[in-house]
Length: 274
Ligand SMILES: C[S@@+](CC[C@H](N)C(=O)[O-])C[C@H]1O[C@@H](n2cnc3c(N)ncnc32)[C@H](O)[C@@H]1O
Image (cartoon, rainbow, N blue to C red):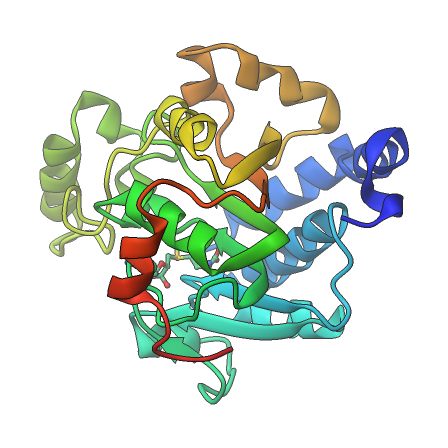
């Protein structure tokens, strides 16, 4: 974080950006996500880059986007001057926005093919709930971020109205039941299949992980799409899982090594130099 991002000045700039108008624009675009993905994901990518830029300068910085998906974020980060590297296990996913797959990594967030402390910013948007071992992915993101670097992680909690993704809101009656209902109604399985490609992930568990991780300092924990004055909901255990809609955790990598880091580097580090 530079001086411009620190303290009261940084907080004020982030507040000026998180207006009600911005939340409404994001929600409107979300309503046409299925019919007009370019509009929704293009706006989400621009919004995310502005949000990250509220915590750190991006020009010349290496950003690793874990689960980068259709590639919309590549253009937005590059426009901000960052050296963007997308990673996804699904190559088909990262070319959907017309992005070239050159410069993208194929791999899993749970075993990043990236050297230790190799990136300035480890970014991940709406991926953690698709990973069966979210803590392992978070540990990996900590490992690859250089001391002083930034981690920016967001996901949809299971108890959010959108927790069941295309099976929502029936996931409130159980993930298996919601999945069966979707299949009955549409004649096909949902893309996000409960306990196969969609897992119940919570704000509480993620915050516990963050507070117990020696390698990071929590800079912010907020409802990603809410206006700044709605951020207090994160202080309400239980209720936050439902009303936050989407959770954003912003962390600074400290110089301290998390427990077991040396063994993890042995297992996963050093395969691709960045
Ligand atoms: C809902 S999309 C999110 C795409 C993009 N980040 C966004 O915010 O629009 C979830 C992405 O996570 C990827 N994914 C699933 N499992 C993963 C894993 N173990 N590691 C990294 N990415 C994964 C999927 O291939 C998919 O591209």
